[in-house]
Length: 96
Image 1 (cartoon, rainbow, N blue to C red):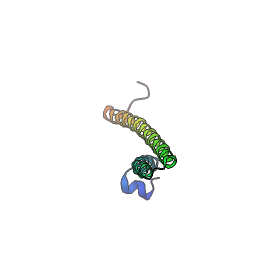
Image 2 (cartoon, rainbow, N blue to C red):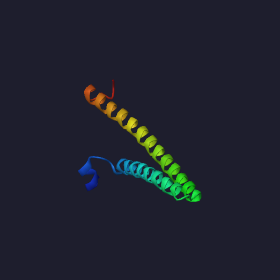
Image 3 (cartoon, rainbow, N blue to C red):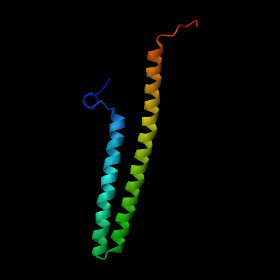
């Protein structure tokens, strides 16, 4: 059964959730890049390294989310193509 959110967006919760993680990871990476610059301007190398590490983690998280979305999108497209082909072929006789 589809949730209200799924009906409203025509997108499954896991797919939507993964897109959300991707978005927030990219936003976090962008924000951390600004923080690295701020720390460098303040001459705080320890903080600059910390923010740089967090940025790298966010980029890795975004890359993983993209990988997961790509693999699931490809699988969903193949599944949809198979369904379309079966519908075009019509019902199959069990004895044929």
